[in-house]
Length: 144
Image 1 (cartoon, rainbow, N blue to C red):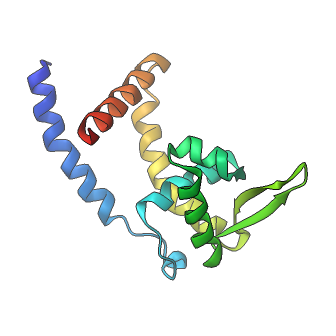
Image 2: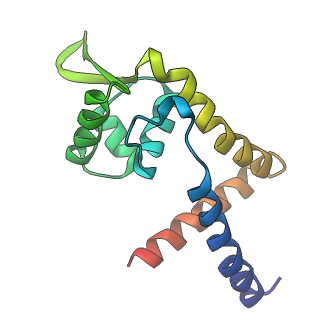
């Protein structure tokens, strides 16, 4: 496939993907919460990696700790997340998904994870890394 053919394919594919992602509704159990796409990323890390500190979440999400702190405060007020004091460092809060909502959140994110697993499983580790690197480069370029 030539570079131009790949560009044409992606210019067609990406808007379709974004449209489908926007139409994916959250589980009814989460309808009472104001969950935005940015929350999906934060919740994904908590599902896959378990409870994390605000600074760890900020690093993974590539945003300022203050941004994560605001998201965590918002979701904590809504009862989606819980904050607990780190027993080893009382200045540090550990963020986790509230047990009452964990199953619904895991179910919601499972479809996204499954689709990526189907896409990535046939690839080698190097091919997966190349794909991720390519998308990161694309995201950086359209952001500049």
